[in-house]
Image (tube, rainbow, N blue to C red):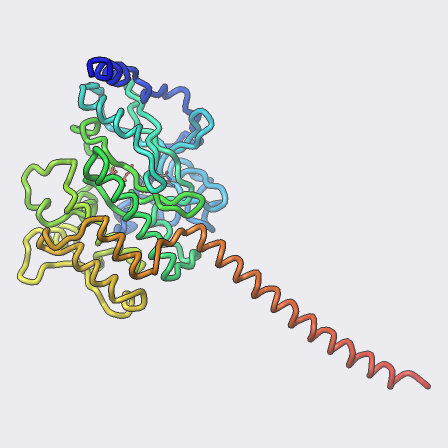
Length: 385
Ligand SMILES: Nc1nc2c(ncn2[C@@H]2O[C@H](COP(=O)(O)OP(=O)(O)OP(=O)(O)O)[C@@H](O)[C@H]2O)c(=O)[nH]1
C-alpha cells in the first residue's frame, strides 16, 4: 500500500507530461486563425469562412496567407497551430496565461489524462509550461472538426455516415464518463475531431485546473462568448459559478445539440434572425415550451424518427429524462442494427462502387463490340466484291 502510494507520487512528479516547446517543429509561424464556431458570421472574424477553415478546394489559396490559416495539404482542414513532436503530428493550443502554477491538482490532471486511451478520445501528448510558451499539445486530427465536415459541400454525408459519427461521439463520451474524469464539461462540435480514418475523436477534456484563470481570447467579443454557450445545458447556464468540469447530464445536453447539427447538417440556432445572446438567454430562462433548435420533420425523419426522439430526450429540460451515454449507444445500435464503424462502411461502399464499375465496364465493352460488328458489316458491304 505504502509502496504503491510512493510509486504514484514519483510518477506524479516525474513530469513525463512536460514538453519542451523548442522540441516542437512548428509547421507555420503565423498565429492560428480566428476560430469559427457554427453559426458565426464572417463579420465575427477575419477572412472568409472557407479561407479560415482551409477547407478542401481552398487549400492552395489559404496556404498563401499563413497569418490567417495554416498551410494545408490534400485539402485538410486546419485551424489550430500544428507541428511535429518526436515524429507525431500535433495540434498546439496556446494558453493565454502569464505563468503556470503547477499545483497538485494540475499534476493529477496531467497524470490522469495521459492515461486515457480510447479509439474515440483524442490523445493528450503533453503540455508546455515555460512562459511565454504555455500550450497544450494534442494529437493532430487531419480532417478538422465535425463542423468542417458538415459545412463542406464536397463531402457527401449519407445517413449511415451521420449516424456513425454520432455513434463515435457517444462511444468516446461513454468512456470519458466511466473514467476518473467523470464528465467533459466543454463538449461541442468543434471539440469533436475527425482523423484520417474518419474516426471521430473527442478532444479538450480534463484540463480544468490547468486552464483555470485563463485570460479571455482575443477573438472573444460578446457574440463569440454567447456562441460558445450554444451547447451549454439550461441548468448550467442558470448557475452563477458553474463548475468547469460540467456534469454528465450537461454533456448529454451538449451531445443532443451536436447530433442536431450533424443530422440536419446545419448550425443548431439560426443566427440570421436572432443574436447568440438572445438564443442562449431563451434556453436559460426555461420558457413554458423550452426553447430549443427547431426540429422540422424533413431533415430528421429521413434518418429515423427515433433520432428525433433521442435528441428530444437528451436536451430535455428535466435532467432525469436525459439518458446516459450507455443507453444512448444502445438506442443507436437499435436504430442501425449494430455498431457502425466508419472505415468498414467506407470499405463496403468502395466494394459496391468497384462492383458497379465492373458492371458498367462489361456493359460498355458489349456495346463497343456490337458497334464494331456493325462497322465491319458496313465496310464489308462498301468494299468491291
Ligand atoms: N484540423 C484540426 N483542427 C483542430 C485540431 N484541434 C483543434 N482544432 C480546431 O482548432 C480550433 C481551435 O481549437 P481550440 O483552441 O481548442 O478552441 P475551441 O475548441 O474552439 O474552444 P475552447 O476549447 O473552448 O477554447 C477549433 O475549431 C478546433 O476544431 C486538430 O487536431 N486538427
